[in-house]
Image (tube, rainbow over all chains, first blue to last red; front, side, top):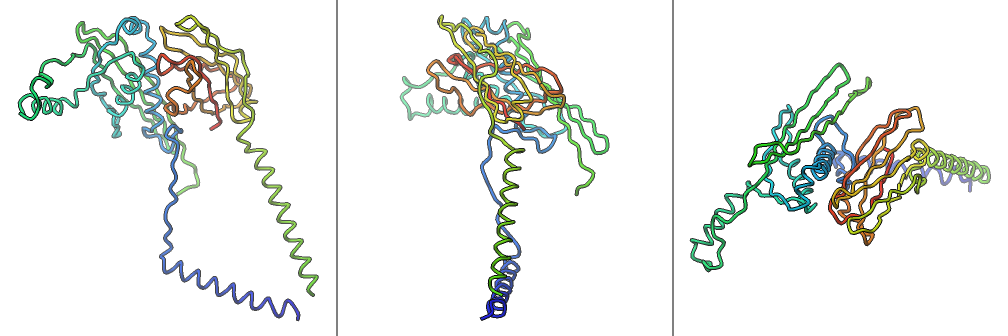
Length: 211
Length: 153
């Protein structure tokens, strides 16, 4: 009849039993749990380390595109027609492995989508040559409908660049300065029609208490 | 015996409820993320290439504390050939350094967003009582209006 003496002991023993079963299950499973995975925002700021990050890539591409679109001599040309540009590689002068082609890919995509420029892509030349060869000499396609060799447009401008860093580390503080320079060179005259650079600084401070 | 146990248990539940509610209130007051939004400066007006007039006036700040700490003093827009260039000037009203992120959004003449989700949040540090110009260029010539989103880091 007494609540404490009749219900509590059985409650306590059932809790102990549940804990024992749970503990055994954990041990049997090796204390392994699946990681929680969730989709993040591709446009969010990534600042986990001072290494080159997605936000750095996006900031560089945004500034380079804004600058090229609104530079007055370039605007004079794009007001009349759409110049043809070939994107060459950007030299990675940093100590990190940075895929500079992904930076130039983003820049090229944004410039192309602005509708002000046209681009040629040298990286797919071998695939194109193989396709044209198959069309003209393969025998499967109608030669009258095949695309003949020697009809492609040539680039008028070429885009090149450099990516460098200056790092300073002292104790718990590290400071990295990135500089991305992009140039637009006129292939006929050899003149640099446009050039711009983007500077980024990232600092990291390790806390005293940590592992 | 029985009524005594029940009463203690009830008191424990009540204490816990009050504590939980208090924590929720405190958390929502200090960590409030969705605060004011709206117009804080004069609108930016520019003449479009086809002769009309386009206006941009929306500044969205989604944090009350940040909205009190910065002030948007100027909104400008201009057409370079047919590409819209936007510039927003913010001034810090606080002596501390404020870190926030901003993003421009672009709308065409019909009001639909152009190249949605292709623009990243740009981090910026505004030092005490400093002013900064946040500028951007539209992605293509169809843009007629811009809006700027500012959020706390």
